Image (tube, rainbow, N blue to C red; front, side, top):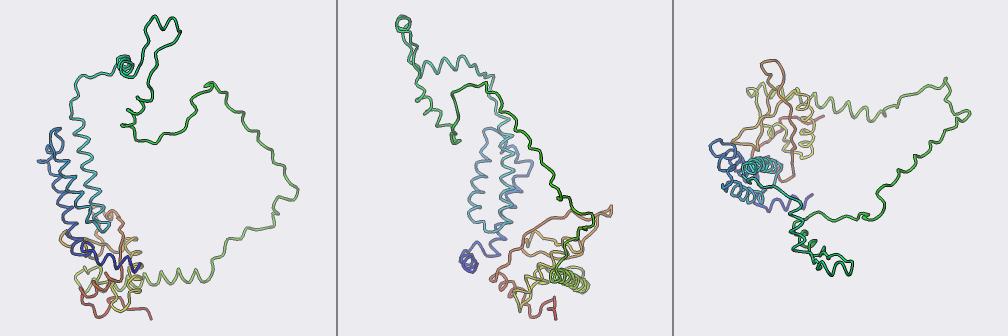
Length: 309
């Protein structure tokens, strides 16, 4: 893990500022693809918009280092795929029909070696067909791996006989005694105390968060709240316990387009009908190097979440 973190530190596109730049470039690409006035540049058969955008996205993908940019790259490819389908539907192929008999005659004339009618009657042979040459030609357009199949043999094969069911003999004394009671599995005391400890810690962080939001006009930086400048381990624990509050809908995480890498914490808002917003999931990645950078960026001296005593 330490080697991976060191390698990512040597990559200039792995820094938070450059990752934010990549996210902004992908958002610009998606914005251009979704504009109605540019739709004809991608759906007309003679247009080159799909090829140009695909080339730009391929160049951007070489600099992707995080999951957010990868998700935006997949969204851009999905839009281009839809445009390619519309472009294919718009292509006019004309009244072309496929005639199997004409196709077979062309194959015979190209790969067949017909004998004369007189020689065919005398020798009782038919003209040969160069299947190997046809196979090599078709192989250029066939990508699946060939599989082994049984070509010869009778096709009218009767189904195999159904297996006979073996009757199970009831053993004497195998029935459980009615006096025996089923006892539920007992949870170990250590596991129970661990679950209770996690619940108490989540409730404590919830109380601390409400106090912090009350003192900061109802909003606080996500990283500023969970970071512990004195301990990387306690920072990871704070992220873990805060995820329970987000899952249960007690706190909401919001992002801004200007700073997508620095989310904010606030209380969840209700819709006009009283229902909560749709829940979403996200993955938080935090390394020792990123923890030090965030600690220096926020200039934290003391944690907002006091350590347990």
